[in-house]
Image (cartoon, rainbow over all chains, first blue to last red; front, side, top):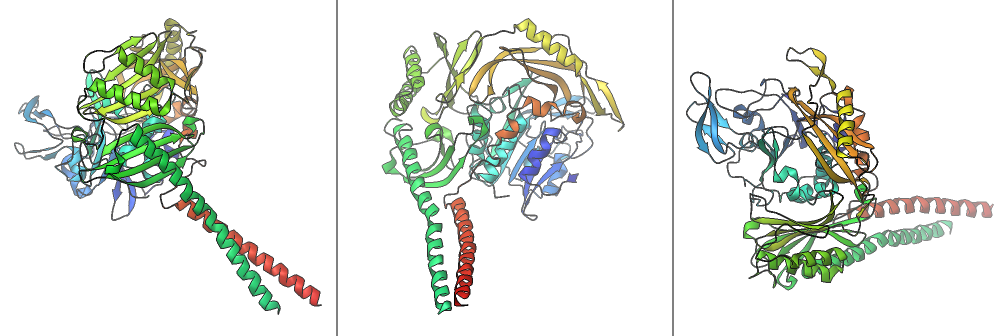
Length: 237
Length: 391
């Protein structure tokens, strides 16, 4: 795991167009008193644990949900991860491997986490690994809870930061940059920052965006998942 | 004698400078009151809130000049509304003093249980609620867009708005699957392309919670489709097959230049609209090729071609993450997002102003410092002249 140095919005905005920022994970670290980005890799196991994908998408060689909590200390109040599956909620039948190593369906789960009791592999689901909160609103954008946690990432496949299909003349990198600007500099709530960033890109608010409405990649339904309390306002950076 | 005059000069100077420094504060207070008044008018006349039932508090006030609006001034205000029953948050954004966006959200609650103190919110169907909301907005704004929206709503029967077309105006209704809300928007269809009116409403439980209207600012440019679908595909093929090589790191860690395999025919071809220059919509062909054999996270290629001119707006590889190969496509970023760098609603041109008038306070401090320096210089000159005269 590489933990970059605390950064400023200007540095973020400067580096994003030139690549190598495909995994955009930041969290507010109370001890450091700073915004810290994560840049990590992936692992898989007998249970379909959720993990970070590598830069080039090869293999599962890094960080899994079940032990990530040891590093996050379950204390992250704000987490925004722009990469595939980091908000995958095991809603539906969780995937297991049988004794022959074949994928099979396990228990039906309707949550953003569960604990693998059967195999003893521990916690499943990145949102819980980062926040330690088992009670976040499942749609924290439109129906926020009143807690201190907010988690945003993708179910299934994320869209590229360079992708312009939704906007024409803007891309999702523009959206992320404007979101952070409105949240950190203008100090609007997370919900309003999502809306204003979309408006800046020409979309009538976050609720009308592909990210929130959902989209298909290779016939898989994908969307940006917003968990927790989007009424929260981020601290000044 | 000299010392007494110098002290008097210093004192007078400080009084003048201090008074001068208060001017921005006073102006700011007056200005925010004016702005609050126009936002209160929106809350009562458009959202239909009964403000006598709420304690209204301004919690954030930001002024900026985003490039997306051609550098015009945008004021964004956030209010907390507290009543005996609940708390609401309301955002109002104005561009050049015209309402462009407002949003109502429950504080610490779900839209599904939203309850507003409003004489208009009860007992109506969604269609009635929509008509009432547009009527209120029309009464407030007098804009033609709202009038057109009302006319097309009158052609709908039943209890909920449905997709319908009148002339070239389309009423589009969306209901996201995960909460009890409805989005209603209007577009104009011209030569096969849909041009957003940038007027839309969102309802939760038949309560208007979101209104966006940029129709006063956006216009439709050249609607001619000079580039046919086949021509656009041909241009996209040329682009994609000329630029589909990328440097990548293989599983063994070595770097290699590889070619992303692409199908000859793109899978996704759409005629959309976008703003080539701020606030003016033009038709845009958006074409995507998806590889059946991705290279790492690089899965395809996308091209945007202006349908009226044939000019390429963007042309680059697509990844699920960011950009796989900076060396190959670095130059596409500035070219493909010409307004991006400037669109930071931020940049040097923006001004953030907190409710306490932080920015004005900073200006005051600056003025105070400048005044003190001027005062010292003035006094020094006075002493110098006095001494010279005494000699």
